[in-house]
Length: 197
Image (cartoon, rainbow, N blue to C red):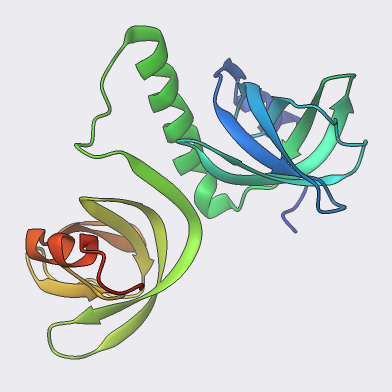
């Protein structure tokens, strides 16, 4: 469980109105549709048919934002607010993503990337290098065009690699990982409905 955020850390991030559809799961396993009312990297207000109880652990998944989880800190008849439990490694990425989504809705700005991306929230995978070495990796986010991985390897930009079963080329490095662009041929192969992966 992530450590409780300090009051100063919670105040550092202002909440923004951002209406995103999603689903949330209560601690008893009930899964319900919902919508974000407002959000920050520290917390989120959710409108749903069955509010969580104070102190209850909630897991939710929102379109374009991904999986989040936290503890209910306020509750009313048709909405509740949770304090997010976000690993420090993901906090800045979440803040950037919220900012991008807000700008797109307020200003009509297009997504900076050429493909819609999905935050997979620490999905494990394997990075296979051209020389045959394999590294355990974690997906930060992924789209039909590429992915960002947290991995203890830094193959040269342009090097051919394999992510799971998809071929790709390294496009950039960042602190703690790499970004890749999937090969077009690999995309065509994985899109064919021949055999489940």
